[in-house]
Length: 420
Image 1 (cartoon, helix red, strand yellow):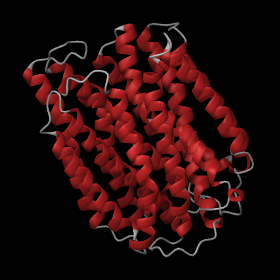
Image 2 (cartoon, rainbow, N blue to C red):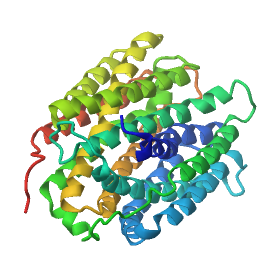
Image 3 (cartoon, helix red, strand yellow):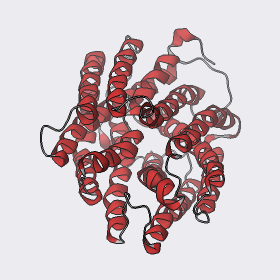
Image 4 (cartoon, rainbow, N blue to C red):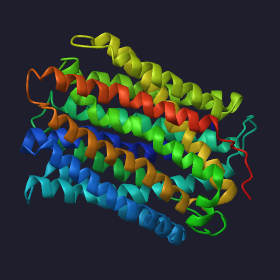
C-alpha cells in the first residue's frame, strides 16, 4: 500500500464518483423512466444508442481537448464535475420540464458528456501518476506503478458502483423519493472528489501528444482496444438486463438490490487480489483466468429459473469477482502501453472511452427492442415462455460468446511487441 502522501486514496474517491455515473445509470435510469413516466423500452434504447453515437464524435474530441488543457486540467475538471452533478440532479430529482423522453435525452447528454471528459482526463493523468510511484514489485508491465494505481483506482470505482447501485433501493425504504436522495448525494460526492484531487492535475513533464495515429498504428494498442470492446460487451449486456432477469426470470422482486450489492462487492473485494496476482504472474495470464471464471458463471445462469435466488447469488459472486479483474487489469495494461507509445495518453483514453461506452449503447439499442418484440413486459406478473427464454439467453448466453471471443484475442496478443 502506498503512503497517503502519494494521494492514491484521492484517485480511489474520484474513481468512485465516475463509477457512480457509469453503470448504475444504465441500471436505474431506464427502469426509473419506465416506472415513473411510462416511457417505452424501445424508445429509451433508441435514445441511449443515439447518445453513444454522439460519443463516437465527442470522445476523441474530448481526448484532444483534455490534451490541450492539461496545464489547466484542474479548472476544466471542476467545471465538468459541476455539469455532471447538475445534470444528474435534473435527471432524477427534477420533474421533467419537457416530454419525459426529451428530458431523459437532454439530462443524460449532460451526464455522459461530462463523464466522458472526466474519465479521459482522469485515466490520462493516471499514466503520469503511475510513473512517479516508487515500487519494486516484479511485473511484466513496464512499471508496477500502473498496477499499484489500478488497485486503488478500480477498487474505489467498484465501491462507488456498489453504493450507487443499491442506494436508491435502500432509500426507497425510508423516503418517498429515493432517486432525489441519490442525486443530491451524488452532488456531495462530486464536491468531495474535486477537493480531494486538488493539486493532482499536473502534466509532470510528459511529452506532448502526437495524435490518434500514434495509438492506432501501434499493434498492441489496437488489439487491446479490440479486447476492451469485446470484453466490455458482456458487462453492458448484463447491466442492461440485470433488473429484468431478477424480476422476471428468477421471479424474485425485491432481491435486485441485495444481489447487485453481492455482485459489486465481490468485484471490489477481488480487485486488489487480481492486482497482486498480476504483479506476480503477469496481467495477461491472470486476466485470461478471470475471463474463464466469468464464462463458467454465466453458463451456470442459463440453467436457473424461478426461485433460484441462492444459486444466482453464487453466480453474482463469481461473475463479480471476474469483473474486478476486467476493470483493474485491462486498463492497467492499456495504460502501460500508452506510457510506452503515447505518454500524454489523453487521446489514447479518448479512444478507450469510446470503445467502452459504445458497448453499453449497442446493448441498449439491440436488447431492449428484442425483449419488447418477443412480448416481454417488465410490469407483468407473468411473461410468455418465449419472452422469458429470450431474456435468459440474452442475459447469460450472449456474454459467454463475447467473453470467449475476448479470451481468444487476448491469448494471441503479445504485450511486449515493439510495433515500431
